[in-house]
Length: 308
Ligand code: SF4
Image (cartoon, rainbow, N blue to C red; front, side):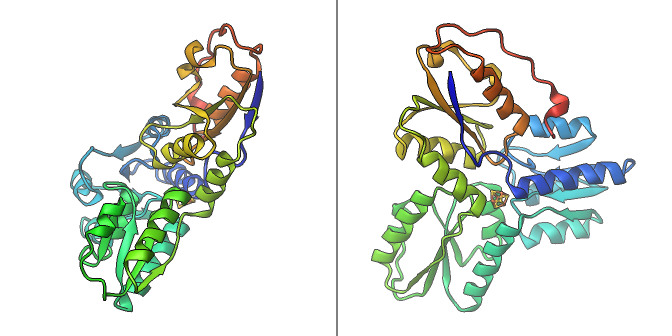
């Protein structure tokens, strides 16, 4: 069958950097307990592969990074590419932990922008996902003056229209959602500055998926169901490219139900998806006769390649 691997796709620079830092810690400090505060990326395969190297992920749904720190008493704590609030850094330091900071430079850039706006007495409208670690770390800069925006209703709820505002966003949000919310806010609030902060890696992946070729009958997005940027890619393929979309984690999630009769598919993956898993799906699809009538056995997943 015809397979379009969408370019660019997969790991972004922030994820590559965080994984490299974690591996380097394991290599340089073999006798020191190493913890990652929350999932390094939203991908269970990567979390499991790091665990194999003795790197322990401390994560529990519903608990903030600050609360998760209560579960770490010694050794190294790695702050993920999503970043964290100053309160997290202070608490880790007070506990005597060695902090390795893998906060992505693009997240730091947004933090700097927000701090500058706060210094200028602007209130911050932050478009993000409730409970997401990046949103949590950013709002922790100043919870009183940074307001999470998840919908137009949140903008409607703003009472003080005389105040100066800056509207900005989590780096992994959809370009189109951010555009819509910024436009809406601009109509409602006369004194507002707009700073769209969807990062370059997210932006070029989203733009590429919105332009899949006409002949594509199905878009396959590879990634963990908890990954925000992966979910956004799937939503864009559906809403902007108007394609049938499936989101899967590995080759073993493919099914004859969705592939039957198909002759042309496109494939992309989230910024947190192991390259090995995506390449395995591409290679498998390329072996299929078009139109697909049956599926040969799936290859096994060799976990030692997950961090390649
Ligand atoms: S998605 Fe963007 S901001 Fe987030 S880690 Fe990757 S490059 Fe950095």
